[in-house]
Image 1: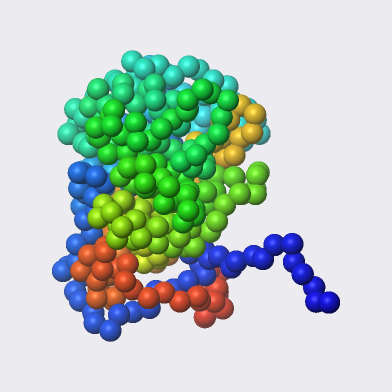
Image 2 (image 1 turned 30 degrees about the vertical axis):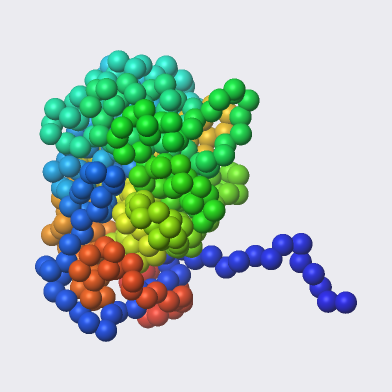
Length: 378
């Protein structure tokens, strides 16, 4: 009798394990359009800054708007707990590495203030920027109407893992269809990594879905609880759900790959995998304008019982404009993400993001086996 496994495992892929196949026709990068939409909101570039306190402040959200993208503010972060969040940021940045998680737990135990949520939303709106704010599911029903009343344009409901059928001890949990009817603004929900969950979330009426569990540089979910799916495979799954849902209903839901990005090549691979947009945290924490001044930490880091993130020193790579548009003297792909995307679109003959979805991708050997050893060992 042959050996039998308790479980059959499917192979899954991250960014380093795949490569994009050039198209049969090429076009000039200047002819490409990188526009993307979330509900009725349109953006010039398909790039979002993630709702991490070290990456997005009200001021940084304004800078992202100027660059054509979208910065998402963590509406449960320091900016909604403290009148002067910037002095607290300085304390976090300067705190010794040993004990910083305990310090973060203490800092984030300060209550969230609804008046400060409204104030931060107005700061973003007064700058002329589109305002997106992020809440965890347990606070969304109570706090998101405060943000929308103050002028928020997009609400993001975000936790490490989100499903449409969350079980809890409460009598009545968060029902996305009811939330959407009440808020009357685009709602983005995440995070998920599978076809089935993505389909159920889309059927609830949401406008966008965040893809990714545990891939971020400041996130330790995979280490702490062992849960997650590499980003290329996760994006392929959720994009397939979007396509099937679109064919069935005629309603298009934006797929946003969230986390795990290091280079412009990673951004391009995510979009070829089916993403309509990407959400970056640490690359933006490396911007000169970032509030964390070269430090970043995950949203799950201050969890009172089971922190799933760590404060990391990411350094400063350049201005936000350099990171998004260049010019750059770096050859490692960590700047000019939009330029890289437009060049890849040109190489694949893709005029739009939807066109780039049609590009082929192959499983590829690790890049260090392809003659890049001396580049990687510098």
